[in-house]
Length: 448
Image (cartoon, rainbow, N blue to C red):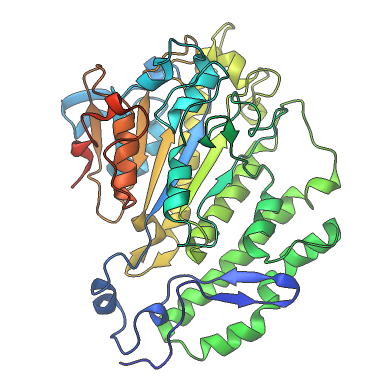
C-alpha cells in the first residue's frame, strides 16, 4: 500500500490559545511512497528516537540491603531486599558495582558528602572550593547535542519543594551547564504540563490554566478528525490511544489541585504529596516520550539535608530521609529498606507506563534506558561506593539481566558508565569528566 500524505516527525495539533499537542510516531511520518509497517521502519534505522531517563534518589542506601548477592557469573545473582520489587523486570536490568564516584574526591575532598556527590554524579568531575563541579552534567551535554531534535531537548523534574534554589546552591543541585551554573527543574507537575503543551505564556490566572488543561484534548478535536481521515487503521488506533492518555494525564493533575497559586508553597520539607507529584510527573514524562517532545529526562528526589529532606509519612515514617540515612535511631535501617523498595517499585511502574505506549513495531520502552543512581553509597559515611541500576536494552544496545562487579581501582570509575550512556545516545566520546578516570573507556560488558 502506498501513501500520498506524509507528516512531519515534529507535527503538532494546535488549538486556540496557544495549545499544542505533539503526536506519537506514526507510519504516516515515514517516507512517502514507502511500504507501511515493519518493512518501512526496518529501512530507516534509528527512526524511533533513543531516550535516556535518569532517576536520582538522594541519601544513598544501607549497603547490606542494597548489593545483590553474586552467584557463578554475571547472570547468576540474587536480588537484595531493596531491589526485590524489581523482580518482575530483573531480566531487563543491569546492576553495576565497583564503578565508584572517584571524581568526587579528586580535588582534595573539598566538598564531599551529599553536595560533592550530587555534583559528581552526572558530571564525572569534581567540586571545587565553592561546591560546584567544574564541568557540565550528562543531561546538559545531550541537551547541546540534541538541541534541534525535539521541542525540549531535556525535561528536568523534581517532585519535591526545596528551600534553596538548585540554580544557586550545589547542595540541592543535580544538573549544571558548567562551574557555578545550576540548571532549573520543574517541581510542580501543573507548570511542567503547561510548559510542554502551550506555545505561549498563559496570560490568565489559575482558573485559566485549569481550563486549558481540562480542554486541551477537545481543543484540537477538529484537527484530529481531519487528520484521522488521512491515516491508516493502525495510525488511527495509535492516535486514539494517545489522546486518551493525554486525558488521563490531565486527570492525575486535577487530583493535585489547580497549581502553585492555589496555596502558599510548603517549605517545611514534609513533602507528603511526593507520591502524587511523582505519579503525575511520570505521566507527563510518558506523554512527552509519546509526543517526542523530549528524549532526555532527569527525575530528582534530592537529599537536601535538614530542613528540606522528604519525610516518607505514607510509609509510617516521622523522621526525614536524610536523618534516617545516618541510622541514629531504632528502626532507621528498616526504614531505609522501605524507602529503597518504594523507589524501586516506582521504577517498575514507570516501565509499565512506557511499555503501554506503542512505537513502531514495539513500545516507547524498547527505545529507552533508565539509570537509577544516588550521590553517595552508604548514606551514613558518605562513601563513593554504590550500585548503579540500568534498566532497558535501549533498542538492542545493551545486554540485560546482569550483575556486573568491577575491581575497585582508579580505572573503574563511574565516568565509564556516563560514557556508555552517551554512546548509547549516539554521542560517542573518548572522555567525560575527569580524563584520567575515562582511560578504560565505556563499559564493554554492557554492550551487545
